[in-house]
Length: 388
Ligand code: IPM
Ligand code: MN
Image (cartoon, rainbow, N blue to C red; front, side):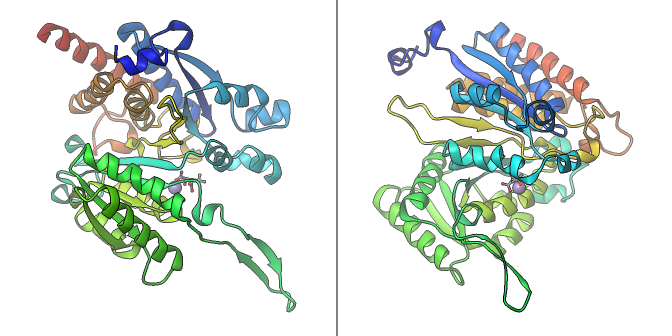
């Protein structure tokens, strides 16, 4: 046991890592159920020291309690080191008034826990190149991480609102803003991550037009000069970045950008991975004095209401988010690798949900894909033991 973890008592059963499992809405509960099986496998078979607490979110608790985020869920999240989140949103959410929705929104949670660093890894799996929307040669070697600032920018800037002008027109307005500290802390995350990878950071802004971006770029440059001059730093305007992501995605290692640019670019980059259903994410808060940080892990795909309840959604984005949790919250890189290798093995053996199936391929249900990952875990872990 690393002395650091010993000191903070992470090896003590009474101080296990607490995980809140919140399926939420749309396909969220279906995919999260498969992640939950994977979590159980890691506690049972690998002795990963964590406890899981399931909690509800969305329309179901709203109808029962008047809150999309009921008190029990707030408590589960409050005590959790990590939250495994499914999805929010869907057509049925019209039944939930906007005020109730807002009171328990995902944006509110990001803000409440100050989850400022949103990591969205984009990896193209060669096994999926036949079902991918981009050509195989463009996807070759794609392996980068978008770090999106998640608690500031135009999503949260004030003033904001909708007003009616004297001539009767309506005017909607929002405020884009970034401060030195908000920029530097997320840029620091990007530089630190790059040092563990290929040592390259590309910062994305719109500094030819926006003052916010002028400050963004200057602060990134200053931090780089002061603390990270060993890391290669480049800058792109966001419009060019969008083009480069589809033209030559393999050029990127770590990309760092603000909230709304990161939202848009990460959907764009999903196509450079081959499938949106495959993408995991981690949202990390500030580090406390024990080196711990609150974290929320969720697939990028969202609630996909059109296929919700059918049992056909791809659980791999959620399962790969669990791999990120093993690495980032539990500090178990070998277990994270094991899970990623199991997902690769399942895909290599031909396991496909509908979204990643090439024409004519057999389509697995959400549950069957969970089965495929669990049996791949057994196999990969077994091979590891033989080689030990
Ligand atoms: C995302 C989503 C969210 C966002 C929505 C659901 C508020 O699109 O996480 O990318 O815009 O941040
Ligand atoms: Mn988005």
